[in-house]
Amino acid sequence: MRRRRVLKTRYFQRWVRAHRLADEVLLRSVSEMEQGLVDADLGGGVVKKRIGLSGRGKRGGARVILATDRWRWFFMYGFAKSERSNISRQELDALRQLAGDLLALSEDQIDDQTKSGAFTEIIG
Image 1: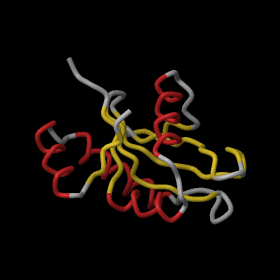
Image 2: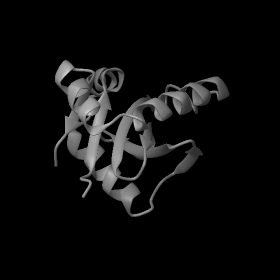
Image 3: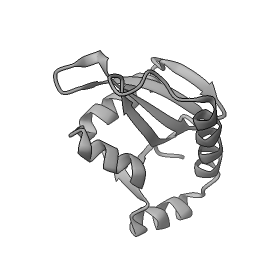
Image 4: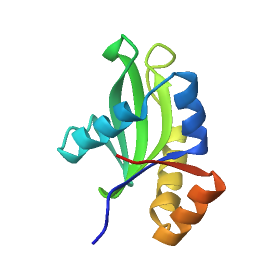
């Protein structure tokens, strides 16, 4: 039986630190998406979700882009709504490619990448 895994890419982990975003917020967003509360299905295993940033709520908060096959959730990219309104078509194409690569990884490869620091797993 597969277990749910929630992971942050190295790039996303830097963004999380800069915005002081708690892992609990990310886990809550995954739980919401598991219940069907996805803000946008961008195709190719890529979804977008609104999350709140300290004191700003979801509307004025941030958007996160994840790769998922509904049991593995890779946080790939985030942006504050105040910094930009959306991602470009070229960025979406690149994120879909990255999603395909991430979702093709075996459990052993994910474990190896986590040990090397390429991913940070959120346990919860």
